[in-house]
Length: 219
Image (cartoon, one colour):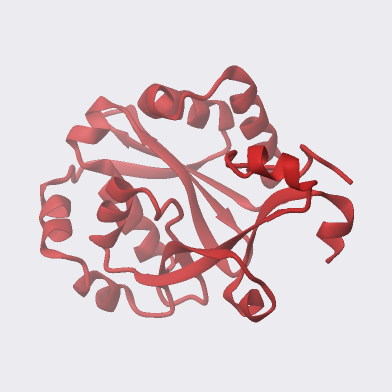
């Protein structure tokens, strides 16, 4: 109700616990893994394909924590920039977000090195309850070494038998979800709510636009 008093049109995400009070909601898939289990139990649930890729992955890798946000963004832009179609302003915003998280002690950056070459950079967000896999990017050598499998397996091993939940993020993207499912995560759903309280003649136009921010049409 507070949102409705401030904005005429928008979209927001909410937890399942709010659903009885809402209408016109769309369920969104999320994949998570309970890390209270032992690593052995977690690893046993990997699919055969996942175990096979880990068996074929590089064994002479070194995982280290980092503070280099610029390196993360450079690797991400090189690996996925052509797919994400981000502009410089988007990377600037992302850098500000990552810096703010780092200043709050909620950002975990990792690098993976093979033969003194950084082949992967990844970022997790830690809110004390969940570890969110925010982003990760391999270079070409990292892809050949199946290094993203290695990274997730390393994190699951490191934080096994803790109270954390590992949140894979990005689970609505088919190819990404297929990869994540190889670790046998659990499904959960969150919900997207759209509202449009503009005059009816404007609703016809704006309902065709997939809005993702609130401040386009403030009250």
